[in-house]
Length: 602
Image: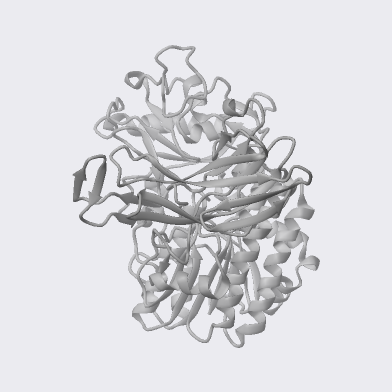
């Protein structure tokens, strides 16, 4: 069996473009095409965790990209955590590890491919989201979405420029670094991971030297032992980087790509997030560890960063749309090369491959740039053609975790809670973009929002400064739900929220402790603001979305179903995401695991 997980592939977009997607059209004619009900909320970490475990969030415990610590109201990644070694030795400015650090997935439940392995079914799991670090299994797996860069983030680019005023610019998702060009030469400090062997955890770094031709728009770049020439507007290949931790004794290794955006009269150089080198991984990106090295040996280096398309660079105006699409094509070419290699070597068992390009490009193109988005769908269609060519009698499923909708208006949910009297500030005028509830008066706050869909009560005995007593919980939630569903856009009069779900009434399982008290399901066109996601309280409540990020799916689930295509007709009129792992196990004659809530599709 072969399953292609195409993140964000929208059923409505498919229906509008079958003639341009002959292999997907052929697949649906051989078997079936249906809408696939997604999770509440329809966020990728939540949806893929359901696909992996066959459980809803009440079972696997993932409710958002961002969870919060109730003791501090501080956010943290829902997918994984990295802990330092427990035993160390201090020598001067250094801290030497005497035991290993730990990287741990926060998802609960057993993955379906572990069950397959238990029954001696060979598996190859390529770029599975929320599978960092990769689970141990009798087979091979490469991690996908959730895999960090070498700085421990989901992707932090660097933009080096000699433009005046560069030091004053902020660029969330990246850093803008002023540089001086002297006699056509510049030295760029490329920052890598925080040095865990130093007490001050100063960032390790390497140097990229740039020599600009005085006559032509071309430059020589030197880093470590690598030297290359780039014309203005050209991309480099991967450049290996050594980041000394204890000079002469211990280093960390990564890799990056350069885009020579402008060489003169001002220097503008984009440096990608520092990726974990698959040939020399500092953190686990595959299982077994040799698998990423084998892929790198066969195919060359590739993006290991889970979300590799640099949407942040477009959002912050570092890339033009065409430059973003060029970078996206580089990512797609590498990842589809891995798929083709996997398909060519597929002989038996189960193969999964995840493609993220449609999701990331839909965020930046949805509703306005269909021609450019169709290009990415066509890449997937070509890949489906390769798969069908090599599949023989294998069952083939192409599915997505959710669809897409327009993101026209941005909702500051904490500001709405302030207006409705559920949240209070230390001083009424202290609204703004400061994050982490900087001016919230917790002694008078009943509810707050963090993440893209979550709303929490300031519950006594759970939150550090909680004021809502347990006996008042249902009443306060009821009031908030009622007012949310009556919430209208002050500019248009349209309803903003479709549904406010109570996890306790919606999910089943043992992992409800981290759940928000309400999950807010917006109507199409609306989404929580970036400021809300990190606990800010701006002065406005609803504003026009003026960013380059114009499509989204973090709304009420029934508006953004995923897609299901198979070369075999199914038995379900209303397939759901949790049906897939049960279907996969059933295909091999294996019963579902305890806690799986899906039905076999065939």
